[in-house]
Structure formats: structure tokens, C-alpha cells
Length: 260
Image (cartoon, rainbow, N blue to C red; front, side, top):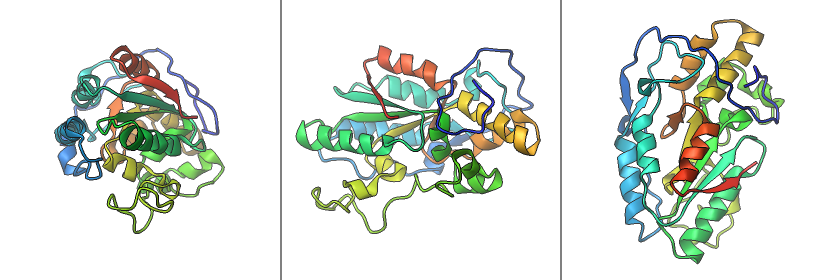
């Protein structure tokens, strides 16, 4: 993976030597971070069960330092990953999302609308496998300010607008309302998560982003990568490498789609 000031290019994982953790962090339980999905389509018992289990699955967000390469289960959200890989809904799709400027959130919304309301599959599970510049959308606003993350994409947008739900929308909105919960004016991570979509974060991209920050601001990449990891938005599932995880998802039947 390149040491990057991320623009609109894809990052790829390189294997190499790993550093050791300075300390093994305490586990953060996702139930403490997010309440789970409350905007599921009617008649989605399997997706509802998955959302409940994911909300209770542990996330590791108390790192002091993280190595370049993840090679041990205590360094990632392997329990939540197992839930995703074990999902037995009849329709599943993974969107590889590497460009923050691409319409990946819109495409996911359209797929969820079509599967739930046109094709009659309310248990449809949409997963975003996020890396490259798209990964910036998975960090909270405090991190955008602390590390001037907007500079990695030319300052546009200037803050993390990708997580924000449109004002006044609700799952009770008319499905045909363009400005409503299901419409194109409401493309964002928060609403997709409320509908059962899952965002998968990439450790390799996180470490690459950290190295890019070090090149500009100084510091230790393993410590900055830990800070970035600790400040992922709620509900995210951290995996060692998204490009490797795509193979795992496709192996259990997820349909691959390119979101950018």
C-alpha cells in the first residue's frame, strides 16, 4: 500500500513485517456505540437478528498502538466479521468502495430499495468494503479536524458530510418522496446503517492514512493508526485488509459490486 496523501486512487495492501502492540486494549462493545438498525423494511427477521447481534458484538477501539500488518484476532473485529460471513439471507451484496467522491452510497441505497421494495427481499444485506479515500468517511469529525483529513481530498468536502442523515427524514416517509428517507437526497452512512447495511473498515488503509499523516505532520505511524482506529464511526466492522476480506465475502456468496 502506498504511503498516501489520498486523492482519488485505490490503495492496496502489501505484506511486510509487523510491529507488536504496546498493549492489548480493552474491548468496546458495539451496544455502547450504536443502538442498531431501526429502519429495516417490514418482513426482515433475519436482517433484524443480524443487526441485533452486530450491535452486541465487541469492537476493539482502545489501542495505544497498532502494527502495520494485522495477524492476530485481538487486533480486529473478528466476532462481528463471523456474523457477517455467517449470514444466511438469500440476497447479499458487497460494494467495494475506494473513492470518496464516487456514488457508492447512492448505489447502495438504490440496491437496498430495489431488493426490499421491488424484488421482495427485505432481508437483503448490503455491505460496503471501504478502503482508499472512501475510508475517510469512516472517521468521526474530531479526527477530520485533528489530522486535517479534508486536505487528502483537496478540501472538498471540508468535513465528514458522508455520515449525516438529511434533516427531518424518517423510515415512515413515503417511499416515493425524493427528499425522504429512501430518496436520493438522503445518501449517507447513518441512514444505510439504520436500514441494516454494514460498513467494513480496512486496517491496511488506516495504517496507510496514518503514514500519510506522519509524512506531513510527524509522529509515529503505529500510534496515529491506533488513534484513527479508536475513532471509527459507530457500527463499523474492522478487518485486517478489505481487499483480502472481499475474497471471504464472495466465498460465502456475496455478490460483488464496484462502488467507485
